[in-house]
Length: 266
Image 1 (cartoon, rainbow, N blue to C red):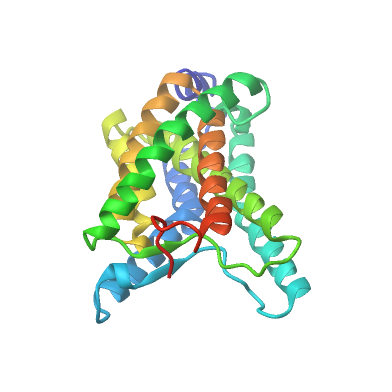
Image 2: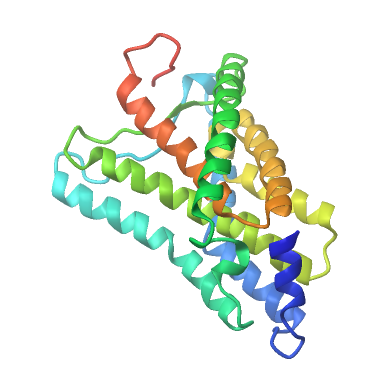
């Protein structure tokens, strides 16, 4: 992979921290972000499967109101949550600086905007259509909760917040779970296959709160994203694809829920 291999080759042993430091910082980044989300999702999943009734009769709500009936306070909490969720990405950038690298090393920059947008849009179109079909099938078979992508009040900031939430999800997940994690695991001596599985299983794990379908679907998505990252050497197209997928899910649900028969609602 150009970005991953080139970045590793460009860092001398004197510039790069030792293996123990790299291992510890990787654990800390994950513990502050998506690794912790994976544990939380597992606990939530256990609670769901041990609760009376089937999974499809339960709901997993995203982007819920943080202060019902108080829109300005709610907005403050929404923006606070989005902003603080990006802190681990800033931490990744800080750790890369110690190697005289940056997020550009992972392909997260504006150096190739049109290829990133084109590849990301095409990827989102393919994954989006298959993802909806897989979710509906998994829910119908009882393997998935009913996912409610948004439950925000109908106020002026609803759609801007949903878009910002989608962008935050995309940046955090693709920078950390693909670019950063693959780089660090490669530096720690993991084989490409083992690193691919670790990244993909991690992605599936923090979607377990949705059910078994959420885990499997995102694990497969993780495998595809890792292969494409290694081919393109950039997380930029993955961030674009993920952003478009989440914007489509969040905004689409807000516009269509209760108006079309095929879209499950809580």
